Structure formats: C-alpha cells, structure tokens
Length: 66
Image (cartoon, rainbow, N blue to C red; front, side):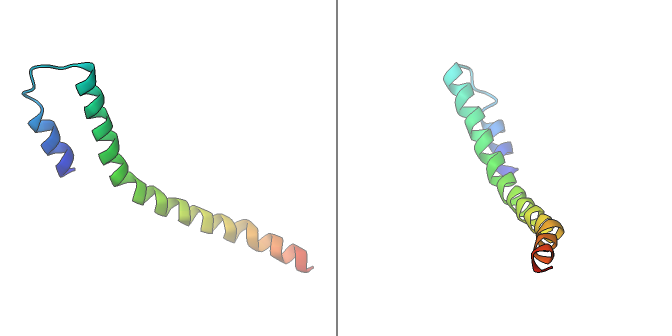
C-alpha cells in the first residue's frame, strides 16, 4: 500500500498526460496489486483444493475399496 500511495502522490503534479503515461501507471497498479493479492489467492486456492479433496476424494477411495 505504501508503494501505491508514494507512486500516486509523486505523479499528481505531472503536467503532461499521454496515453503512454496512463498505460504505464495502470501496469504499475496491476503489478503492485498482483504482488499483494497473489499470495492470498494462492493460499485460498490450496485450501479450496484440500477441502474439495476431503469432501470428494475420500468418498471415491471408499467406493473403490467396497
């Protein structure tokens, strides 16, 4: 969050706004957001896969043994 705030405040006084500058800023915001969100979303994915396996995987292994 600090990076986003510093980047935004440093660029508030920019006089020329061109499409290239806008694209550069958007790409930077996407990069910083990904750095924050990907570890959280990765952990949620792993937990979801574990829970899914516990709900269905154990049922299939019990059905095969019977």
